[in-house]
Length: 323
Image (cartoon, rainbow, N blue to C red):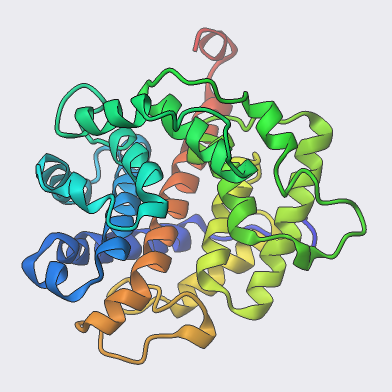
């Protein structure tokens, strides 16, 4: 499946996005409710809250006037003000430093105030912000969140980190199955600030990445991998493509719209993992949360990018030159 023009109606994507954001707005408070604390394991709940903070950041950049954003922001602010929350970040020791760094970097008020300041100070003092004993992906992720938090570090630069990535090292003719979709997509998210800056790739690297992401998107659509398809839609945007106009991106977005529940959820990570329970149950929440959040993240960013591109295209040459 190539990247030939395959225009998808933006109104359909806007509806998909609105539904996903509404579901997140209505149900994400469960993560910090007494019932959620009692019914959800600690580490998955902490990770889900970090994902919510990441969505809030992109949502605020992409559509700050959306009334639903205020409710999600209020949840994140409440959690980040909780002096007991930092303790939960270390419940699983192998994720502790990375969760602490992400928690500090994603603070809704920025890195200037709140309990996260002490957490960031511990991360900075603990020797974590060096290349020592890090996989290429962990090194890149650490660099991104250290920069976002404004922390000094001795980590490698982004071009060097891309060259070490699984995506960059995937050779022509190598099986597509050798690529891990999460590694590929998150590498591009970090390089491109989740779609809000250019990834900084040379022309040959950009063409290479676009080819792999397009083929992976088509493969995920064939297999009904909803969560991964949503990530790949955002990855296409990060690479300067318009997923509403690529065959694979349009197919992925149509697939997500087709499976979206009346309440706005994407009901599982894949067609084989679809939630059978009612939407009001814990089982449904646990299966639907990540895929719905990914859909909201991808679509709100892609739609904002298309709006910005349209504004640039209609700007006069004088105005465009003074932006």
